[in-house]
Image (tube, rainbow, N blue to C red):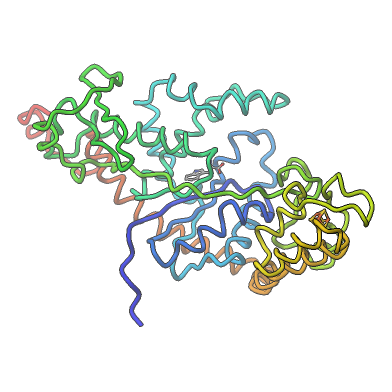
Amino acid sequence: MPLPPKQGRVLSGMRPTGKLHVGNYVGALRNWVGLQDQYDCFFFIADWHALTTDYADTRSVKQNSLEVMIDYLAAGLDPERSTLFIQSHVLQHAELHLLFSMITPLGWLERVPSYKEQRENLRDKDLGTYGFLGYPLLQSADILLYKPNFVPVGEDQVPHVELTREVARRFNFIYPKQGYKSPASITRFEDAQGSDRLVIPPGGHMVRRPVTPKELMEYDPSKVVFPEPQPLLTPSPKLPGTDGRKMSKSYGNTILLSEPEASLRKKLKTMVTDPARIRRTDPGNPDVCPVGDLHKIFSTAETMAKVNEGCRTAGIGCIECKQWASDSLWRVLGPLQERRQKYEANPKLAWDILEQGSTKARAVAEATMVEAREAANLSHEYEAPEQSVAEGK
Ligand code: TRP
Ligand code: SF4
């Protein structure tokens, strides 16, 4: 059966943090897997981004990338339908990052909310480096190289996509595509959300004013090097770890996608519950219980109804309830782990797929770089000296 035409391109990535956990799945991967039929998808491993905070010890970066790739494949990212690649094998990311570094005001980077926050959270590391400040700019390059329509991300990453849009506008303004000069004042239309129209007057800094209808008529977004992508916000349900706090590697409270069934059941057994339910005879409330949160994400409506009824009337015990939660979670993880076996037995298979994907990604990235270089007068093509002088570029 022929596949329906794809509705545009999607790109997203993750830093290689090692084996992925259920939180990564619910907050991103599960959603990516579902996008594969509708969109032309590019998913990658942002290994250079790992260096922005862990430059001092890079010993595990490569192994972590491989682990993430195996998790990608296990989760159902499909190299037949998506391009799966690794950032550092597509050198164009570094080149575009460099071009962007030339035109991006420092203030734009200093203002990104994650910058100050992370620097404070990670006080034990010296993050007074350019690489750390430039983190979101490298991300802008990651994104714009592939000209995606959408970037599926969690809420915390939306400011990075916003910055990406600003960088795209600025590049398009400073380096208009060959043969096209956008009206001097315009770099962007009203976007899909109907937000303000932005203009950069000659001279650089951004101001807001409505664009005149005449200017709108003259502006053609298909004639710029970088169309602006939209964030595609991934709804992330509350997913607690075993201690009841948000599941996160840094809290050590995770359940891995590769967690063996016995270990999963053991972890859930000791999971925190509604603190008000002390004795078996006390009624509880699944809405304030981390196990209840797990049920909401992974259990069927039927099981959920049994939990609600049983918990609130003290009809069931927490032990039983946790067994059900384990069953529900295993129904999701079991098939993932089955798919995983092949790659676990032969990790090189996963690495080879990553290499093939990176080759595909390089072709797309290079096509964009040809346009970007040309716009910035850095094309690799020979140009006779008289000509370029005569044209007075
Ligand atoms: N910063 C992202 C994160 O921490 C990872 C990332 C790097 C990314 N480059 C990207 C995500 C490009 C989307 C698009 O999750
Ligand atoms: Fe939580 Fe289930 Fe116990 Fe209720 S019965 S407190 S939902 S573990």
